[in-house]
Image 1 (cartoon, rainbow, N blue to C red):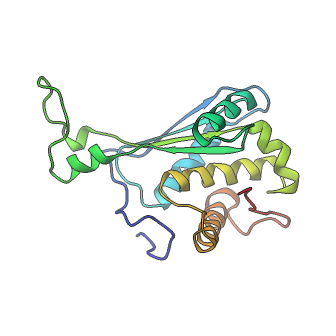
Image 2: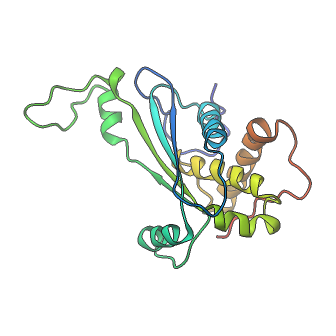
Image 3: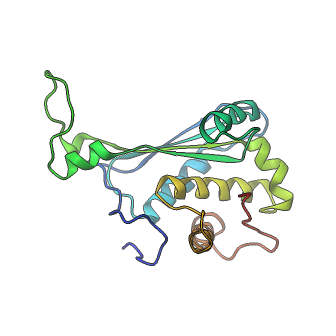
Length: 198
């Protein structure tokens, strides 16, 4: 059941074709060991908790500071590496197919069957080196920092934002609830903070 009080865009829950949400993980850095299976499990649980159903795909990419700085400059116009970037994929064509409208296609392509079509949610790119550096003053531990960044990035992919005080407070509350349910299995440890650089 989807909680209507959550800060979301005014869109229905994301539903893909037949199947389960899939999270693909890649570790493209060597600064910090990353347990891909653990972060994949957290991401999958967050997607399910947010009402994502059916065959959907999300990618988690762990990159170097250099790669993150390049992505940050290219997509955000900001210099230097950041901790996390989220890239939602526009699923307009998937939504059209799911609602019975004809998709764009070439002359030789048959109309896609929505049951065969995964919904591409997007990519979450994380920089473990930045996470490790900011963890002591932020989430407290590197483990908690990475968990926060995984959840934060996924919520952005799903339409959450923190550009206004009300949406920021609501997003932080949702992050905390998801971390309590799927990362700690209980209350946040003392010293945990969610402050994001704006």
